[in-house]
Image (tube, rainbow, N blue to C red; front, side):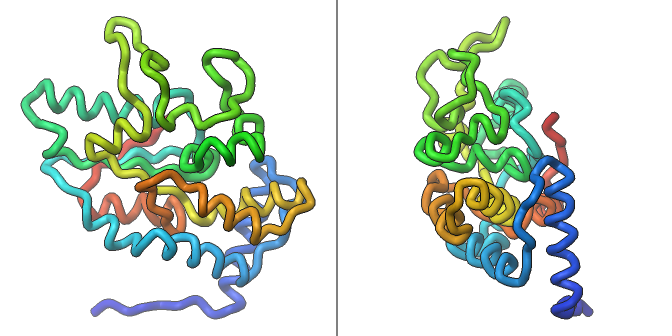
Length: 234
């Protein structure tokens, strides 16, 4: 028999405080202390894009895989999804019979946001993502609607690894709601803005079709419960 266990208020506060401490250790010094308000913001983030459990019920196909993406890692968060589809196609399994989930968490959450947020908050600098054409910090999301020929691989040629291109072939993308709250609060502090305003702006700028989940590690667990084989992107 399953039991629903809810942490008492004190325990939830301790967990969120540890989350903030871990974020500071990862280079987010002086991040505002998280409290139950932040917990509610995380809930609001994922419910705004629908029920994440229902979203995972949409994973389909005989062959299923989840890519756990914790940072930019060059082109690999998107290239590996395309390689999975292409090589399954080559061995007789069409994309329609493959289930691919890409989890954007921790330093990879930037890829869930549109160009306007990249430019306004200098996300290329914050998340250390360079523009391949200029070798400078990117002012746009390089994997949202890339131009033809932007991505080529030796021996293969042009590859369609834009988020929109992968979504067209059934790849599912989700983003960590906890990390969105943490990073938006940090940038709000640095820019003398209200944390709520920044988070709401980020939520409004999510790319079409991207599901917010309570946390990236929550999504890793749910994906495996839906028979997705685990692959770390690094």
